[in-house]
Amino acid sequence: MVAVPRLEVGNLPYIRNMKIIVFPGSFDPITTGHVDIVERALPLFDKIIIGVGVNSQKKTLFDLDRRLQWLHEVFKKQDKVEIASFENLTAHFCKKVEAGYLLRGLRNASDFDYEKTISQLNSIVGDGLDTVFLISRPEFSHISSTIVREIIKGGGDASPFIPQALHIPVKTYVETHHSQ
Ligand code: ADP
Image 1: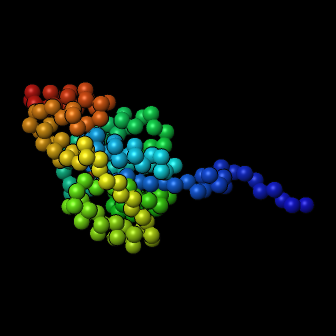
Image 2 (image 1 turned 180 degrees about the vertical axis):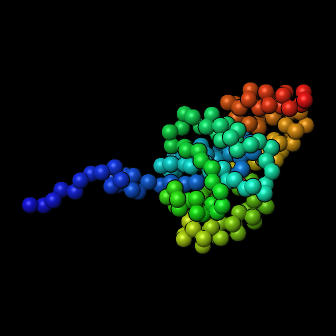
Image 3 (image 1 turned 90 degrees about the vertical axis):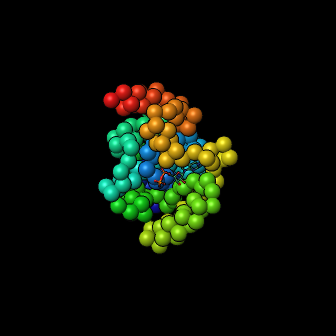
């Protein structure tokens, strides 16, 4: 008699062959440019893990909890998107969550020069970990978290550059911090 293999969740071919990609960054704060990259990667992968890299040496405008909370808010309707934070090497985080790919956006030639080296290093450190690059769409290529932070610090309106779900939370943040 031929033994029929038991189907356990971890053995299901679909789950075993899941294409998981990590989108790492500071997301300080998340912008419409980031959202566009995630939305365009969604049809290509089974799961996208947005990984907020925690670097104690790097000072951020928004604390980690707030950045995570805003990411949850923006992607709450996307079942394929998970949010997490990690310390140390991105490649090690990918291994931990069983992701075979890294997602990065490219806005211009300086992004490319920087990302090329990092992706080659990640391929070595991450045992063949591949980085998938999506070129920014023209309407988002001028947007960066740095610009958004400068607008917020100056008390300006950053809503054209941040997802709709965060217009009110960010406006509230600006009002409270500029009235102090
Ligand atoms: P990091 O601190 O690693 O630069 P960011 O949060 O600034 O992280 O960005 C994360 C990723 O999103 C990077 O790959 C970056 O190039 C990409 N990105 C940021 N802004 C845009 C944009 N406007 N269009 C496309 N990609 C973007």
